[in-house]
Image (cartoon, rainbow, N blue to C red; front, side, top):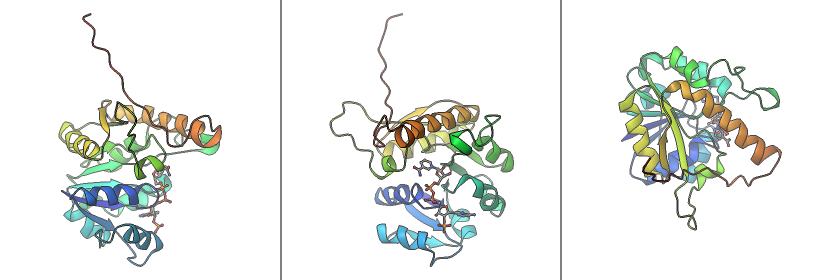
Length: 216
Ligand SMILES: NC(=O)c1ccc[n+]([C@@H]2O[C@H](COP(=O)([O-])OP(=O)(O)OC[C@H]3O[C@@H](n4cnc5c(N)ncnc54)[C@H](OP(=O)(O)O)[C@@H]3O)[C@@H](O)[C@H]2O)c1
């Protein structure tokens, strides 16, 4: 599959690296091919391709967005035409002061993106944990896989993203339509508060799903 990354810092670079190693054709959408973030991503994996944002997105089947939330509108507006009909994986989180929701919990960042790009299939994924867990999500001593929760309105787009999530070693848990993105963004705030602020859990902590089979 052809995959483009808009943003390849803490979150985007390890995901791009792993997806390339799984055999995907991964491009970095780069305004400046000499930028630090391009060079760092290439130092991690020399087989990542680099193309102009328009070319990378135009040629991709799936586009990952891993930019600071405040940069989303500028980054996406310039690519609105190329993003038509594409699957956009929104890895971003709107975070406000003192770890509040950046849009005052009125709506999610993903819904804002969907409103900006009505002809693009937005799927929210890879947001609810710290980047360490995108670097390495192996839990060799665990009998269950780590869970990646994702949501979106388009069933076909979700199937595609769910498959990528599974290829990356997660249990893919479809939590519903894009209206659920707000709840995923609150889950992110919960994780950040626990792992980064209160330090009551290790940043190498993720959630898993246990389901009991019951007759009733
Ligand atoms: N850090 C985490 O643990 C974590 C976990 C889950 C989700 N997230 C979310 O993921 C997103 C990225 O976080 P991060 O920690 O990976 O950030 P980061 O390390 O700062 O990387 C951001 C990337 O976005 C690029 N970028 C910035 N402004 C841009 C623009 N206007 N157009 C195109 N690209 C632009 C940067 O390129 P330059 O360096 O060249 O500017 C860089 O490649 C955020 O929304 C964050 O909330 C973060």
